[in-house]
Length: 238
Image 1 (cartoon, rainbow, N blue to C red):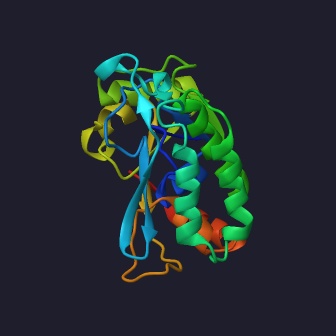
Image 2 (image 1 turned 45 degrees about the horizontal axis):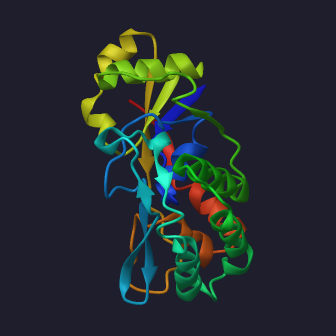
């Protein structure tokens, strides 16, 4: 079985969901420290002029030591953040092929009352997975006590605590920091995600890669979007 791991992101990009699809188990690393101005609390969409960010206001109860699963949504000081986000999405994507079917799902998510960021992030992930027909099992690093001081140690813990013998590494820093021989000598298999950078309909040109999956789901119908995500990458042995 294949496990992949990633920090939760706010309406992640296509590559995130392709990695999720290629895995049997996906571990959300919710027990890591929050990083300011990252994709954890914001992401990119496309408007008529180019890139625009949508974000979620968060407070850090433990300052710079706040874990992702401790982040609190600022529903009081910025109580209309979700309405503003929905208006932004409607303004930029109304008329898209996927808008009539997918917008009500996003609306339902953002109008729910969540106090903790992690609960919203999990809801977003599971709703999009269901929409795309992805059945990968989601587990939390915090619930399995998965930690590691070094990248190699963490990789081993992820596989041990997920019950998997193969780990799928994405396009990030892991490929540069993992000692491949060390992990293989421990009896585990290392795999990489070979991402193919698919293109689909966007209202503006040139095509912009790496934006939130919202852009795909509003611009393409459900079946086409599902095929694009599932065929966006493949597993490659390291």
